Length: 444
Image 1: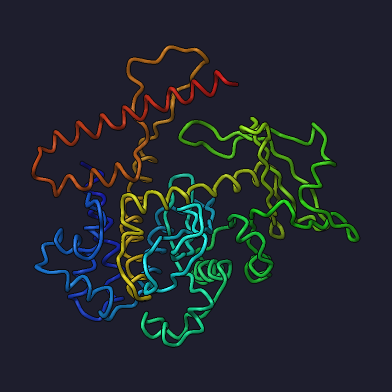
Image 2 (image 1 turned 90 degrees about the vertical axis):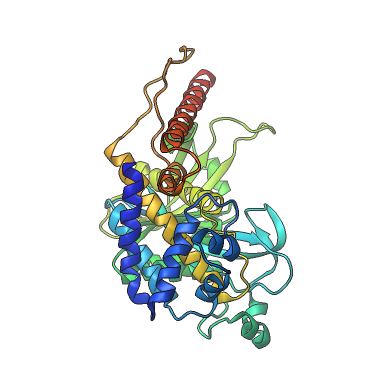
């Protein structure tokens, strides 16, 4: 129950730092109740279910909080950003840019159109939001969000008026929205030394130039497509995939870019110098072939700031830090209702995102501190080894920390009952992890 009390303490601290964002005490109280409901076990988290969980007679107060109440949403986001960075920053953090969508019906929701959304893996009627995750060895959490406003929305005064789009919200590409979030971190002195992201952000020269500027001078490892032209000499450029023809066996190094749920994520890596000694092309190749007999490839454009020596191992580590944002999306949507809002307007959508990020930040920081204080590294495993009688427990996850925090509000079963389930889940997951590790060793 220590973690549950820590969650309450962190929630009080973060909400206290956000108090100045609200003009009146009533919406501040409602905001805390909203965040606490997002941390609950409600299967769907919208104004109706949140209001019922909070004890309100109707959804009116929660709807007013999102739509019309006077409070500074961006200042609240800055408070969340400061809380996460203060508690997680270990001097080796990475900022991760990525976008995630929400499928919607109809045409009224701000920013909705038929567009590709990664959560569905297809073109769908949806909205897209650009996020930034702050990741360290101990943990990670979302620290920024910007709704993507398509050009047809940005240039339509009537749609803007109906959706309450503020004047400063104009059309901006996803990389530009990501740059705005990074600019907030930079202005606060919290921008990490490295930034990573997928091809959407790696192919944008404006974002790369901003990171490379003398004022920012931040390193990056950004995904690029295989067709991207790379300057290999002052007079020669070539596609990224054509560089593979120049590599020999000794150029490849097998290394892990970090531990996953099923063991270390090991790949073959190679890096190629360009015309600028601070810029490199990083290539990742899978060790095993896919169903079509092809080893999957990925390409990254890398930049090392002036005066900071860089190694292949350092670039690999940064490239491997891109996965935490995917976990933030999954946990945020499944456990904290990040995409559960049934709102239509720009202010309401952004406010729901900020409050969901608040709930996630409180629990993520608590889980990270618990893992740091009680490291549960997996024991070494040999191929064909028999499973142990007791595989132990996996490190405390964000989802499990949320369950512990909710024990303080549960009354229909005893605390001991829920604690037994807490231990059972972690032991069951540890056993599954053990078999995954052994299976990987046997394949190798």
